Length: 295
Image (cartoon, rainbow, N blue to C red; front, top):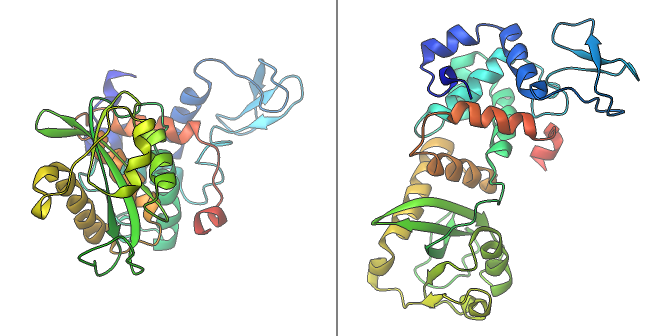
């Protein structure tokens, strides 16, 4: 990555991306920086197309734009405003609601909401970097009045979180919405995000017992009053709930908000490059139509 993209102030961002042409040029460099390959036939040679920054295959004559096949595909508002949405979401400490984006960028709230969900798709974990070392796993209810006991609250949605401890703090975080706190659903989550060699700590919930065969260093501890022996995990859960209420005010698309929260948390110690990292993910991800977001 170029040094100028490692840490962008709002003034530097405005200077680098003043209009759609500058955004298209940057996407073209990202997409074809390592060489051109036709999406239709795989041919490696191209010529200039009718529109600037588009490329036309010299074999099958298929024309491709820098946004085709990415999460920018068929964006129906100025591309520079799409870049602004990514900039705000990647650099704001707590993120930004679609209502606030609408106010700042003079776009419809529905437009900002739809594109923001495409950005949150890019924020989803790749699953390539499982949690290691000391890992804690716990579940929590989100979205309504919480019951004092049990895991059968029908007014709330169940979420499982896993944190990687580093010293006295937390270095990384993953979370997922699950239908039940069964060993099946807890195990599927842990298989995806926790290294099998990790020293896993959980509470005494019976759903974790069958997982000791897959996670040899899994230890269950009875939860002390007010979670005294899982203070960092409870702090993370309460932080997520507070962020969700403060920024989004609802939990309908809960998994997308969990992905956003984890993305921002996991990069909180490396603010530099967050904007470019998110751009890379947007270009590498396939298109996501609006109707699939609603579904």
